[in-house]
Amino acid sequence: MRFLLRASLLCLAVAIATPAAAQRMLVTGPEPYDRFRLTGLWWRGETNGTIRAPQLAGLIGRRPEFDVRDDLGLEDGANGFAVRADFGLARRHRLLATMSGLWPRNERVPSIFDDELVTSGELSLFEAQFGYKFLYYTSSWLDAGVIGGVGYLDSRLVIDVEREVLESGEFVTLPVTGVSQDRETAYPLIGMSARFDAQGILAVYVELSGFPSIDAGGHSGWVMNLDIDFLVYPTEYLAIVTGYKRYRLALDDGPSVGIDAAWDGFLVGVQYIF
Image 1 (cartoon, rainbow, N blue to C red):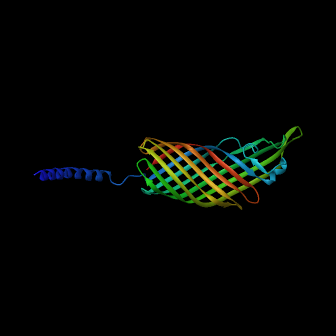
Image 2 (cartoon, rainbow, N blue to C red):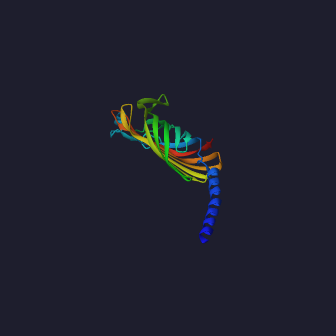
Image 3 (cartoon, one colour):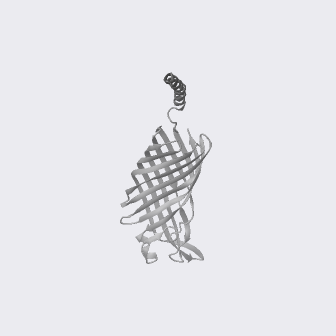
């Protein structure tokens, strides 16, 4: 009798629990994901690093390596942009496309080489990345993945050195020397990313990508890109984005002008989710 009573109670519990569990499965279904994210950002940054330029070495009689900021006067910040598109094929599979640019330059600043010399220059960057991301870990608060694809960069270096002389009561400038180089190449892209999400209200996204061996204009080196985004969601489909971006390019193994420079600064923009 006790056995029958216990069995009846067990069957009743299962009968009550089974529809509830089935209902939860039907309501929950597959975990949702963002189909498309489009992000537009203002990039306010600057450049730093060194330039190896034998053409300029004779100006001050030392090794042909010059600090971008201290020696060449590229100290001021510059305005740039970043645009990103992130398309979800499935919960763990996404396609990425990004591009950004920053154009630091100066106009006729006094040179440290000589009191009569002035320098003007530019060390610009345009870069793009196209890749596939596989999320090897997904949860309600963390997505972590690896990235593979192709990257492209175009970096232009221009340095003009002029001498100011007094002629007929007026100062005029005469060319002394200069450097003009354009580094442009495509390269394989590898990387990783992580996105921390606090219930759709706050999120942090970190991405590190690049490649350890590239070649451009007869110079070899490496490239690395770091993006850190902080996102606040005032609505379900719109996020306010602030963050930091750093792009590092080292092409200093070659016969002529070498570059080991970084472009970095803060980001401000919006992200729209479709």
